[in-house]
Image 1 (tube, rainbow, N blue to C red):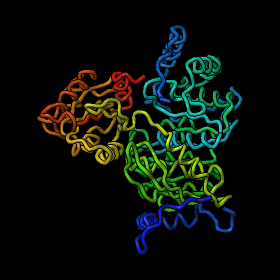
Image 2: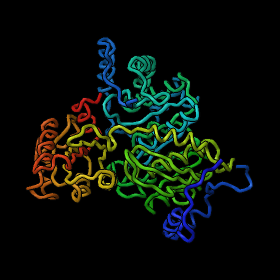
Image 3: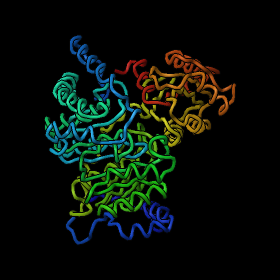
Image 4: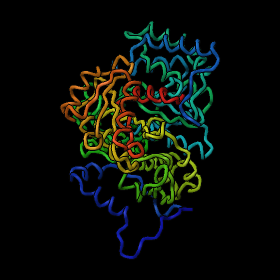
Length: 504
């Protein structure tokens, strides 16, 4: 049965109605597209543990895992791409099409993909489905990328899966112009592991883009599009619309599309693609959304409007409005998978939904790793992500002063990223992680000085020394109890900081 939010006083506006009103004040061209697109609404005539594993304790297993990691490292990295699914399709053919052994939910977008995937997975697990989840990049351990039943596969299974598919990988390498990339091999491993388990449903996050992403050899019944913004513009395009064209490639014939709030030009592209392939669309702010939310201890309390009705008193142990929106998207995706909104006019069991969301974790997403002073890690790495994080940390934490520790990748919009944090950082310590993609600390400092001014920038090339410098700044001027530290700029920076703080 559907549960309803607390009754509002007579005459007060419905928060969801306000969302809908705001959402409908859009470019009129969208109306033409939407006229040809089926939208997903409930019909009245229907009846109503830590996710980051440590290195293996067994020295022999650790040695074998390192050998696999070294082998994978000889392949193209995740930022070197040849836009084609020919190689991964050839591998799937040799493996017997394992990706077709189970239904799947496919997630693309610019920000929020991993958190949304974790929420979808938690909901499926609570409804007693065996799940496989494939996400990227990893925070600390490569085995995080492939999960079964809500937990990363163990090192032994990761190694055996690699050894099982390696002969077929080598066959594809020999027959193609280019060898399979690092990401393509991992994708093949994930799909094989899911089939071997076997899983009831796979939750799959794209690596980059959509149309030619290695994951896009599945025919997902539910396609999820998280908010699109400018990132990887050298590969995906320089406008929201251009990026949306590539990402819309995950929308398959007859699928259901769960569309998060989008820039108008991106929404136009997505809706046009839905029309072309006769997909059903559910839009955040129209068919589903966040009706209400309030900050709570350790997270936030939500009322979500699903495809089948309302879900009140949902506690989410993650901070920020962006995570509330991710939760609404995740809930709608799971409802759509179960046919709610098209075949059934009912809600999911609300107690199960509450239990699932209460158990969600998303390592490296506004994650507290130390107190006194409080140190928070967040993997934001582009301007849109930085804006969401800046807003969330201001809302959720009452810091009297916030010190930033930033280590970014050289191929990102570093200026835009720093500008998003300028209003909330009192000082920023610029540093660099160990990746070959890391932006040189001095080069990053030069940009930071232009944004923050010379007096607010400290340069510490070593991450451990940068963290020490930030702690010292946080303890200055008797503000020990009120100052906080945010480590951000890259998933790699966050992962390495996490290790330094004894996590994993």
